[in-house]
Image (cartoon, rainbow, N blue to C red; front, top):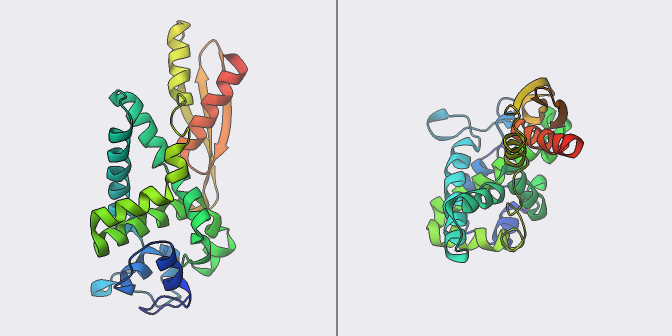
Length: 236
């Protein structure tokens, strides 16, 4: 991938085909640049700031949340708690990463040599963040209505599916503990391995006098969820 202010050959066409409105290429270059790309590669942003997608990801996260929250409010006459549950599932890093893979982001995200060799192009964290950064870039270039339409197109299957409809395992475990007059579950990170961009977390959930369960995932939250699910399968 090029380290200049121009998009790599084929990337602009890919963005346009995906529905994004590309005007200023440097914005999109930033949205596709992971921090590991800086250093050995010539990539700098305004006022010499290293170029990476973090600022656009921050913006895109909020734009995505508003777009999906608006859709949920109009589509479902449900209480706030159920709407929040669906929203959290639909805008989660895991969902963003899945959509990024379907869209082809792994072929266009700019990574440092080591990060790519470590599997960064298939990292849920990197792909999810890059997906949000692309949404942020489109918001800057084309405004909310155009970006909302892209979100609804890319998230169509997710919005029509069951994401977030089932009770979250951590909530289910908490209710199980309360219903059985047990102490509330506690979660502890018992192991963390791998580089920052491809970290693996092992979490243990414990309910005293009942038992414990462990699970490993690419984020602390996902590991907690899987541990709660495993606990319910073993003791629920």
